[in-house]
Image 1 (spheres, rainbow, N blue to C red):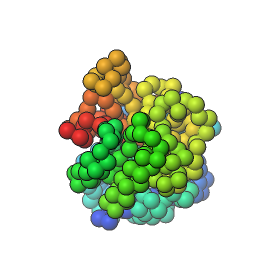
Image 2 (image 1 turned 120 degrees about the vertical axis):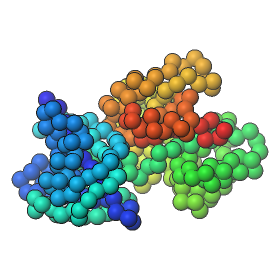
Image 3 (image 1 turned 45 degrees about the vertical axis):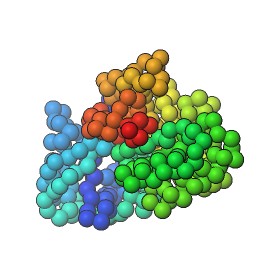
Length: 311
């Protein structure tokens, strides 16, 4: 039997989020988790979260927004952890069950002992709702970098540099110049495919094409930089989870002009695949910025794409 569990993300004005320590005698005692608990029979996730946070913390919550759902298999039990941003609450959180509480920035939790199912939540919190992919550079570096500047000025904070046809020396120059811009803007730059070059340039991470993903049996570098992957079905998502990919893009959700022969998943299939993946997943393919709300409701971290951010 799979237990349905709910957890809430409570944030303060400085962006810190609340963690509660699991008590002695509990499963994974002493680890730090996002507060919440089991969904009772016949109870909605929202009702369960309202009840649990009132009982545990003495607060009353308002509106909530889905962040991620995580299926996880422990030796003792299997769970699905439904996680929501709490957009507002009344009262001051206190450990009404004698549990210790801590407010921490997401990046401060990387070495915090946590239940394994809670770790992808931290990843989701550190990722934005939009993941922009560059168009193929056409030989004019100045225009390409101007496009990077435009993305950053529009608020994009996660960019994949995708250049399949540049010689490595020119790619290195372009990636270094783009990284200087993203670093100054507080944004993150991932390089498509070239692990060695991304590490040499100390970029923020690597995005694996699906073919590269399926050739790997383990994560190719440490967790000090991002690892993303392109996925199209449940097998590729399973491989991504197995080797420790931080997040995936899944698609195409809708038909696209760039891949006219690729069968579109549609939102229902995307939602089902996303629900089975224990990592953040961006929706990709035939989407625009306005589709982000629908993507979130389907379980996505947000949307990714080229034309969605370059039109």
